[in-house]
Figure 1: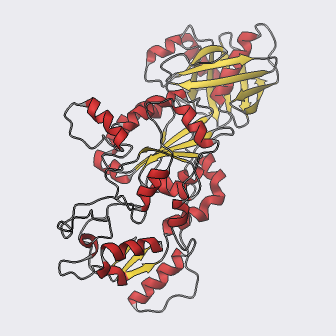
Figure 2 (figure 1 turned 135 degrees about the vertical axis):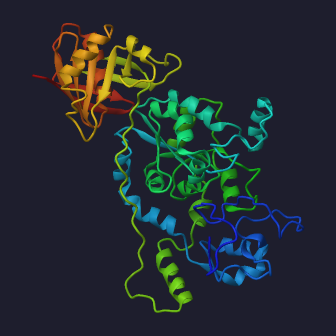
Figure 3 (figure 1 turned 60 degrees about the vertical axis):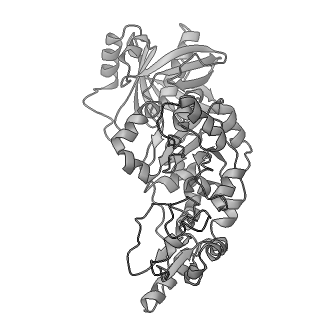
Length: 487
């Protein structure tokens, strides 16, 4: 929903991306009505102090919004114009580029992209529950059962180490007002641990739609990103329904009542797997987001030119396509606990970032640690030490040639058996303590995972010659890794 008028709005832009998300706002004109105001559609939003509509045209995306406008403020109903949803139309038009968006986010074959998202409310996923900070943590936790979860995101982030990093790619979209309200430095500080374990923060202005298209599942709240996700058929787990702040008759309230819930206190992986392998998507968002998909550009331009009073151009009205985001591959600098099972020419591998406990499952374990880890003590325990060359400087003079870098690392950390310098999206150079080196090229596999597979294979086949190719199984995907002795 949008309003169009020559004079400025009486309230600042709240930044909502969808029409009528149902957020309640303080009412002045509606204070004596006895009914909760409808965000964006009640008198205090659409009528001036003299009772006249503030807008010459109020743009709606679906007839259900017109019905609600007639109920909440019939005086403004004649200004309503059905023009669809340009934001959703851009999403629909860009869906054929889903694979490119996934590659931009560094999603590898066999990985599933889980997108966390939060709107900007105390009861949102990134909120604190909305209560006073009186120290009653038990009471705030109890509020979760009433639809106003408290501190959900920290609980959720603490569960992320349960997910094997080669099977799940995690990204997050936070509403622009969250960034503005707390500041980028504070947001990145709060999420630093998760970022070191591989979480990527998506630009909430330019790239959130592309991330939404790329996602296999969404974990969110009552915000518009969750609603748009369901509208394109993506499974959504609602972790913060916000039923105490969402207008109960709104379409977003109906959505969060019907959508599957995520329990932040329960193991995360079974819930995600259930959603990914057949999660139910409520039909409301697909039916109610817009009544004229793909038509918003033409309808809006016709309205604008009619209000201005000039002839509309003959050329078709078009929306800007969603741009391809910058390449943002996952990079875990938190220590990786690696479980491996080795066969003749195959290695099964699972890696867990920042694991608090030894992961469950069969296989032998080793510790892979990035040279830029926050905890230097972890390097003294590492079996494998990793580093990345900058994408734009594969021959970075600060690191030196791979053999030189590896020799220095192995000399500093005497318990390390292998050092691997990642030199490209699919390649790395691995060097052992004797100075032997191998070029590893894993098609679609994280080169750091290929280095772990080589380390495990050599430990299981001590004295044997390395094969020219290793099969590395991660999840249900088998990757081929070329193993070439480096001269």
